[in-house]
Length: 96
Image (tube, rainbow, N blue to C red):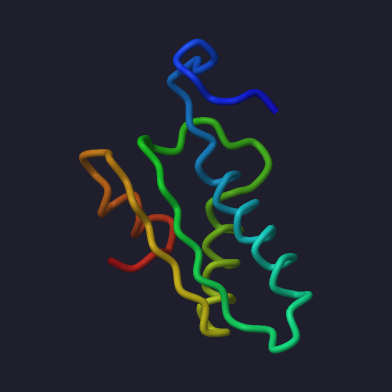
């Protein structure tokens, strides 16, 4: 993997936000599945943009996954630099 530097950063004005959030939750599930006490996860999403490029997962699928994990005691934090951060977070199923 290349290091992110001013020379390697190539903004392309697209954000696969739903895909990234879904993959992050699944990676967290895999990580804590090996822990003895099987704790609830805390997942923090940080983005600078709106969803505009997801191809693998739908919003409904992501919201369902978030709701199921919240029912198991997981917590979700949504950090966004966009002007409509509240509506974006609510749309993903993360309470503010």
